Image 1 (tube, rainbow over the protein chains, first blue to last red):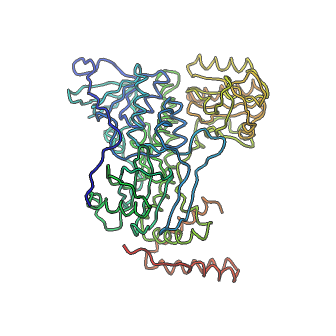
Image 2 (cartoon, chains in turn green, blue):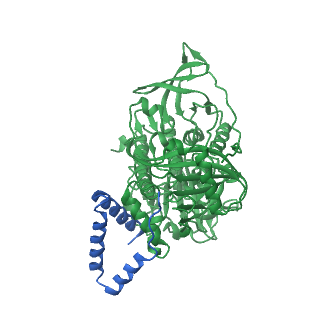
Image 3 (cartoon, chains in turn blue, red):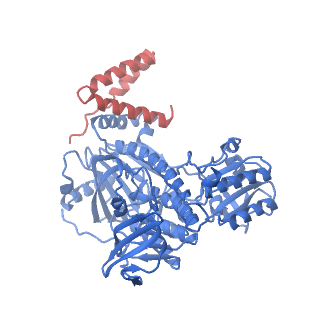
Length: 569
Length: 63
């Protein structure tokens, strides 16, 4: 079969390399933060820092955003983060939202799954979007912050020297090499991280043998955006095939190689194209199509045991590699960036002790272990590592059609928001225990519709503006002066803090009104309850019915412990 | 049994089978079936489950 390859419906702009002013081969300017890698994680980190007023240099080895089929699914949690980064409109404009999928075994539907979706949600549980577009939207957002984000294309780190108070880097561009000095270095340079290598750090965990071929094709089809998975399909017996609809008539197809197939041979067009054709025949797709790109994938479940090494912080694939199944790769990296940016900003601005960064590693390593546990289970099902997993999977798939109790075993365990249950930052657990419902310290805010102060419809996540947020639940109205004074105190100390009053329906003088009447129950709150929320939207502490002066004193201790852990002991 | 518990039991069984090796796996599954039947203590239900397990049983795909 011969078929002409088509281009992606996207043309990447090429960016020239640029040399900064040098003194004897050293860049004259000393930097607060250098981020290595302008992928989704590097961009999100840089934007997050810039929004907190910290200047960033972003180094990218390539001359443009990425090419090929990489991350394609953005989770609701990531969309919430992207909203705070000011990039949501681009994602919603370009992406395809979806809520569920179907699994088939030999032509029979054995599972129809849906991801959590209810009337409280603002954002879809999942959005399909190619990584080149993700990076392009983030690039445009970073360019809006160009007074603080200095993007240097075609600039590759060749070596680095960690010092006690910073990092020296040697970088190479097509027009020459130079040395840079930075207080903090963020490695967001991907699975083959140069920075990780230079530090001599090794990812630990499991590498799986099973291989998948990834194919992007262009095809017009009215088929809805959902994720079909075909196990042992008539078109490709013994294999597993996943299909994802993407914007602009691009379809991403992932299929498992059979045992004994030579991967290098299998990925060649004369082997790939007939399999795609037989898949499309089986799906009943009759439109003309063209291949765009093919690649190979092998699942890894690996992580470093620490992401914080002196003045170097590792994030995304540089820190951990999670299997593709369950879409935790880019999403966990965006979560890393969101966790890191506010902490590093507080440290860089001198408002927090560098010890705060230890919590980045603590929380995100724990998150990686949770993501890896799910990823391993998904991989064991999607690419069975031995005869036993293979045999049991055949049994589950054959029975699930008639026996609904077994269907959860086929569920793809899509990514969901992680709770930092054991975070050292979580404060006042004994106060939290008084609540019968709602988010515990370490958990993200459950979404809820609200009427905002200007009368517009919004959601509780719209109230998070990048700093700390104190949510004050009230029957009626105005913010007590003591609460405002508390926020002023912490603003003065460099930790941006906003008070938001949440009033029951009919309440006046509030930042938001609970017009659906669902908010207080969802949060287990009553009039007088207080929630202290971190800049990344995770709850720090909560007080149900504690007198406000006492709650504020305790909230102050929590802030102090977060910013200057050594002073609290 | 929650979904997560079912999942953990499934993985445990896969790992235990894998540890026994392919030749011993049918015997181990037979022993497990007998233990579950004993635990079930319900003959009509056991007969029905044996029929359900045999229903539509097809050979795995030829690779």
